[in-house]
Image 1: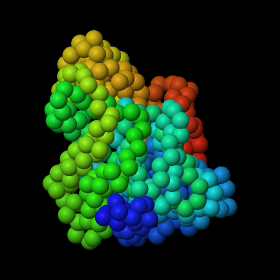
Image 2: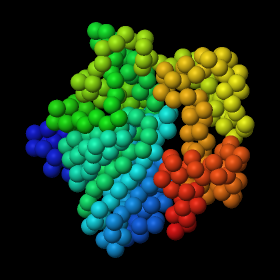
Image 3: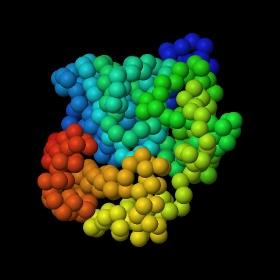
Length: 346
């Protein structure tokens, strides 16, 4: 990573070689098959990311690889194309934090605002729920690191206590110049080079958890310009136990008929406390969180080829109305359940 800091973006070629080795062990590339690429990206993103291109005739291939480091997911995505491409990623209210690092080819990203240009040598942090669009033209290699929300909450708490009286407030998109965050860049490179080997130390769960903690602290320190001064207790502390119970209850019972009263009872708190907790710690209502869980469950079923008919998938996810399911699904993912299934079947 010394080369990246001293010589600029061209030196990330070393990262590409390490990632390509990992991709080779994950299987053969998909040569010139847009449909298979869409299906592969849906599978790698657990149904949260769609892929499209302007000129399918100029699409030549795709390869990807994924590894686990603690609770983090490290993904390498490589597109070989001559035209314009775009991905759209939907993140629910309990989403992961995403770190996107272009290794070859710049891209533009947008989430509820203007497009942001992200060239090699920079990293884009996506930390808000909602739809994120990414577009580029030509060949592209991308490194994605997805960090668990619980780990982020804990690290933000540690970072808050390290400052005088403020905590970090995340915008939807944050751009980091890796030449100014050289320690973060070197640590990411160390993870990649370790995963390249047959006997990865970071693949060990105990080591991986520590690596996740260090990466988050380095990431947060590189975002100090986003500090907002407010008392620590007001936001970003570890969520209380009743919130964990509520989220677990929703995930375990999302297929049943649920309302605020049922979720509150399952969480052991009043409906008023439940509403307050979700607004404060998740920025959404309990029913919005439930909707996200149901839609994510349905999309995973469609991507995995499970669940029978569209109506059966909707019912299993907790939607008594197929039409309401179709409306919510399209609003979240930009396509109908039928279109998702058609894409996967080619």
